[in-house]
Length: 214
Image (cartoon, rainbow, N blue to C red; front, top):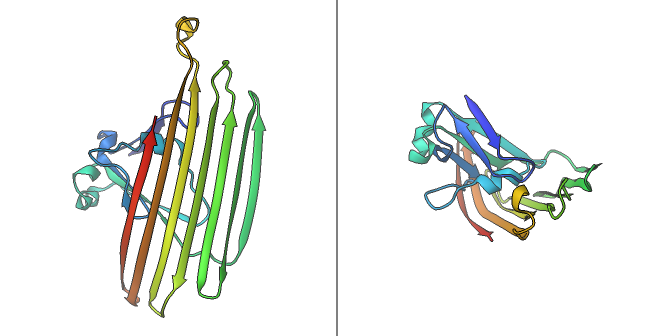
């Protein structure tokens, strides 16, 4: 009942389809912020978004998703964060044909009542055709402070930068100049969590998103 469909390789416009409805009827929440609405389509963001350590992915695709409004008739995809357990550090890299390389670096830990996680990734490829370069960078930082026995405050930041060079149509390469498309996305939040009892909790999130497409 759920499908995520990309228009090409990494970074291509990506859509999510739940329960047979249109992609714009699946709500995407990142750190509590509604990413898609009547003025924003998350296709470019989904094409390059990466889950990093400490991220939690939740999916609702039943009729209860309609409690989030008309943008969630198909379902809801929610990406949030969890408290890191212990300390960790991870790095990995890949390399392949057509000048392709990729890497990730992430870590998490705590100092007293402050816990944190951070990570970043990159991918570069020249692709098979000349003048067809693609590169992408992502960054993420999450801070959580145990301000009291049942009170936590924190902040998150996520960044995504993409650049794609298109060589034009194969049949008109000699007359169509190459073009460059850029997409930058920044999302940040500040939140307060309270848990007065084991069965009841509440969370207040204030955040925003800014993106640039050229």
